[in-house]
Image 1 (cartoon, protein in one colour):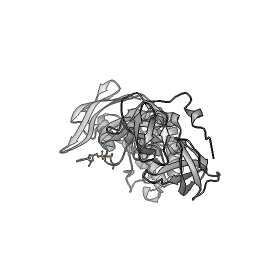
Image 2 (tube, protein in one colour; image 1 turned 45 degrees about the vertical axis):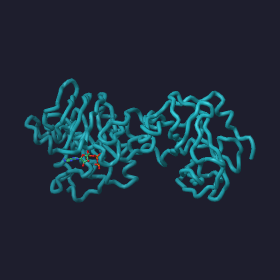
Image 3 (cartoon, rainbow, N blue to C red; image 1 turned 120 degrees about the vertical axis):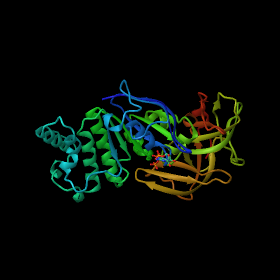
Length: 377
Ligand code: ATP
C-alpha cells in the first residue's frame, strides 16, 4: 500500500504538452479514476506515475519515496492495459506466474500457491491450464488483472482495461475491479474516457482536459458541483442543458432568445456578471402538461422522446433556443407532440461565467420553489 503524490508534474513531447502542471495526492488504498476526452493526457499521466515516462518538470512520490527518476521495474507498481498484453503462446498459469518467476527469491511451491489463490479471487481457477488463445475477452482481462495482482504491488495502474469488453461484461467487470481493489486495499489509478465508468468506480474522480486536472472530487461532488462548463458537459448522460443567459440583480437569470415565451430563473449570483451560461440537468427540469403561465415557464411541443428503460427523455426544440432535454419516468404519459411547460428547478441550477466557463455560486431565494408553482393550466 502506498500514497501517490504528484508535485507540479508536466510532461512535454516536442510541441505537445501532454500533462500540464498536475498537482494532487492519492490516498493509501484509494481508487482514483482519471477521466477525460481522448488525447487529454490520461495515459501519459498514468505512465508517468508508473515510471514509463519521466516528467519534464515536477516530481512523483510513492509513499514517502521520491521516485521521479526511478525506473518502472523498481517502482513496485503493476500495470494493466486495454490490450491485455498477455503472452499468447503461454497458458493462463504461465502468464500469471510470469513476473513471480522473474524474481529469484521465490520457491516453486510458493509461486504455485499464489497463482492459485489469485486465480480463485478472479474466478478463473478452472482456466489455469488453458492457452490464452482459447479465452474470451473478459477471461483475458481477468488473467491480465491476475498477473498484476499476484505480485502484491504497492499500487495498481489500470489503463482503459474495460474498453474492449461489451457493455454487459464491462458493467460486471467494473463491479469486480472495485470489489477486488477494496479487498486488496491497494492504491489504484484507473484511466477511462467513459464518464459513467468513472462515476461508478471512483472513490474520487479527476477530470482532465488539455493536460490539466479540471476538478478532483468524489463522484457526487463532480456531478452536483461541476467546477466549470467543461465538466458540466462531460459528466452526466444525457448531457446537462446549457443555455446562454443574462443576469441582473433585479430579475435573476433570463435566458437569451426566450422572448415571447420568457424564461427566467429566480437566482442571483454573487459575482457582478451579466453574461452567464446557465445549466440544468435533465433530471432537474420540472415539467407539466399544457401551458403554465409565469415567467419561469417555457411552453413548447415535445419534438421527440427517447426511451431508456426506467427513464424517458423528452426533447424540446424551442424556437431561438438550444434544445432542452427533460427526464421523466418511462411510465409517465408524455408523448411526442404533447404541449408541455418546463422550468429549471432554481435549487438545481448551475451558473457559469460566459467567458471563462468557471462556476459562479448562485443564491436561491427561500421562496424560489413556492414562487414557481404552476398558477394556471
Ligand atoms: P486516449 O484516451 O485517446 O488514449 P489520453 O487522454 O490517454 O488519450 P495521451 O495518450 O496521454 O492521451 O496523449 C496526450 C497527448 O500527448 C496527445 O496529444 C498525444 O498525441 C501526445 N502524446 C502522447 N504520447 C506521445 C509521444 N510518445 N510522443 C509525442 N506525443 C505524444
